[in-house]
Image 1: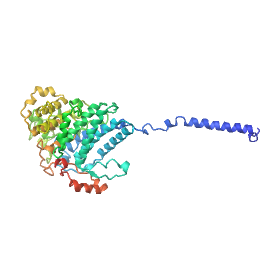
Image 2 (image 1 turned 30 degrees about the horizontal axis):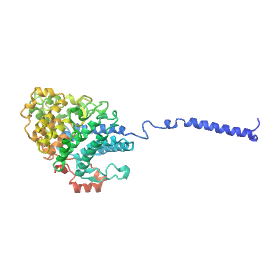
Image 3 (image 1 turned 60 degrees about the horizontal axis):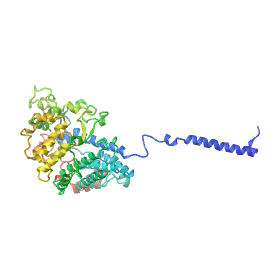
Image 4 (image 1 turned 30 degrees about the vertical axis):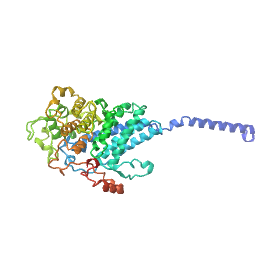
Length: 499
């Protein structure tokens, strides 16, 4: 065969053919290149609605878990542990706060994506969820890193300074007010499928924001002069500041019951049977329910296995006192002690939800403020608001008709008597396993009356969590500055609104 090197025409043809083959090959290799090399599980651009679901569920589930299985359940006097009872004896070690800040980062990402994508409604929702998480953080610890926290990506600062609780509260109250105004102006665009709290209903989000604002205002009213003035502004303008008006508007997330993380904390996916049965109903809770012949008793509390052989309490329902030397032996042993009922062993059931705030709390909050003479509510009295609080709790548990038929509201211990003790006691009952609200109200008011117990490490009830043990090591200068301002880092140092 003759070589093509010496034939110019053949050379040109050959060169063209080579280029054509290369072009075809390159086109074939790169067609669909973006699709092939894109990881569908790691999108390059995220949307705020993705973070909304995560922010809501992580917040609600963590808050509910605290209510059932952590310190707030014990110091709030709902649960008595008959083994490993350091919570009841007040032998508390420091508590980590990373989970709350992690939720804060999720919410912050949602807000940033909402701003970048022109979806301001997610910024408003972020303000509400952030206010809930940070208020819980400062309610537990007092002064905490806030204004300079969650900024490590932008600033590189991993050692944030601490903010005073007073400043944090003022900022959160303003955020909640702004969120309500933003949603009033434009509450459209919430992805209903991503919003596992209110399915895209901006009106209910507004009610949650304003109801949460009431919670915070009452909590700091003793030391925040404008608290009652701001409350009255809310109450005088229901169109501008709507509040919860029924149980259907309570801020709650259902439990899917599919895996441990989305199941009720006392259910079988989270707590094995032996652990559940060492979790006894507290004497305070059982006795208060018994004294009032309260219909919620039989729903919540299991009767003892046997009354034969009981040594102290021969009732069918027996709560266990706190901080005993040998709580498992109380009343003749565990067969003579009440656990919580099977109602609290369900992983997914109507009524068992992760609650951020209930309508009954709003009723009792308003009842307390009206009772104090600090505010007025159109068409309502402290007595009627107190009744609304109890009734809404009964209705929540499907016991509204039972309470009425049993004459519950006319019983001497239940019928309104105008005292804060009676009101807070009923609020405490309705707050069973609702965050740390029972503890927070007790440390604020002293009601219901609780006793520390014979084996308690101190007679005074703890008023806060100690800052994490990591803080003196990784954030030493700011930690020391915080101690100088706040006071000793122990469980007895009172925070701003408790002084």
